[in-house]
Length: 380
Image (cartoon, rainbow, N blue to C red; front, side, top):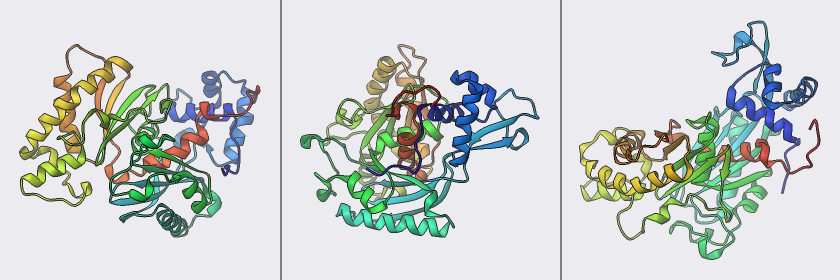
């Protein structure tokens, strides 16, 4: 595969991860947290500054720094101005393409409704959109570090488990990573949409300061992702947290498609999940669906609490936030016994920015410490 234009060593990645977790701080504090010698920390952080991943700033330029540093101290922070990640995120009825910074700011974005019949044609279309977004934002293509693609597909080499939406027959047996990387011309990684959303939550959402959490992801189907010790737990075969498998397709299940059917039975038809009103969770007409969906999800949430003992189970995805908030309230009551310290939270990432999941994939692959595949050499 293609490689980024520079290579981060293990300790480069540890520095970045420390700043993600704790926010801007002086070099001496980073050295203490990473157990790096100050001279080594200075040299490695300068690499990251030269590559556009970190910047050296005044204390006064940081809003409410968490560091205990004095006001005259210089701080390091993740640079939001130089490098860009492309995020290409699919649902069954549209594709969202975005450019975002290393700190999650969306620089440019576009949503396109498409039937997505042919993977190669869609990859070519998204490559054109990425180029148009770069030009429209006045960005040099050299600023595009890498790309991520999120798909509502169980990605596995086992053909019997390579599940795709019924609307996507031509995607079965395809090689999405190779197809998109060839079209985009930059290092590209592909993930299941639930796993990608968990990464976005770990970098830019309620999981940003958590070591361990479980995300339940509501799209047209139901999926999710587990972040354990700041790592995406994909499982031995790549499909961990495939929560939809708990609920048969031929009966009502806690999914976005099922909610649309429920509304349709009441005479309210919607073409897309994005057409559902933001206030839907406060509509008493869906109380029956909320109660049934929460009852179905309660054993799953309880098992996650007991099995993982993580800091939170997070509800996220393409449903209006008010619906997720109402589900969370039901679940807090249903799984209150036996008591658990695991919180039930709702994602604060806006559903219109679901492409942040895709953009988080290359962040993870390029910068996560445990993704380093080189030799462990002191000072690198």
